[in-house]
Length: 254
Ligand code: GRF
Image (cartoon, rainbow, N blue to C red; front, side, top):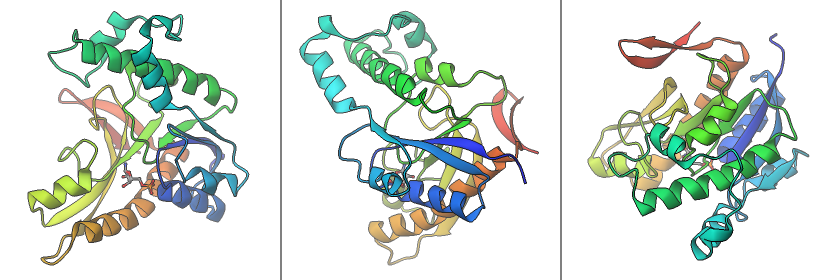
């Protein structure tokens, strides 16, 4: 058995993936323990699932941070080591409009929140950060403070579509509305773009003629609960390596 890894989890909603990871850790199919569960909003019901297991929880209130910045930008709680131009140049969430006011507000408010996330998470050392329905893009400010070893990223995300198709906030909805006959989910490492990082694993399911969007979401979640623990276990076993091939970063599974 591999040594147990320490896993941090971030969520935004109901936390059914968090539950699947808790269960897999308990069942021994992940050689790991969850050391914290955090959320970006106070309403995230999934935190209850962690509390029930005595896993430390916290909220970094993104909506409050964004609201407060917009009403009084001069008083913003900016981290001392934040250089807007440097982060704006490195991010790939926005193209061609990196100087606009909208992008300035986006990056600045996210970095304020991310600095608070990092400060809070630092209470519980962790090997892997798992985004489980965490509905916030992360900037290079955050990503670079977690990824220290080249080829060994340590932030994972699950996306409700077969990437690179249908990035964005509504993967199952976009898959369904496009008329796809197959849907799926993807676990990938986070990079500077939106749902664009190197793919670790995918699972697919058929979309039948009479399926509704709710049925597609249900089928997808069932696959997610299998896929995420499998990918986390590969990380725990030290089998995941990011290599550069033909100009792209891809995951090599050892
Ligand atoms: C999942 O479909 C996940 O792929 C997406 O958000 C949903 C989260 O569900 N990013 P839950 O909170 O884990 O139940």
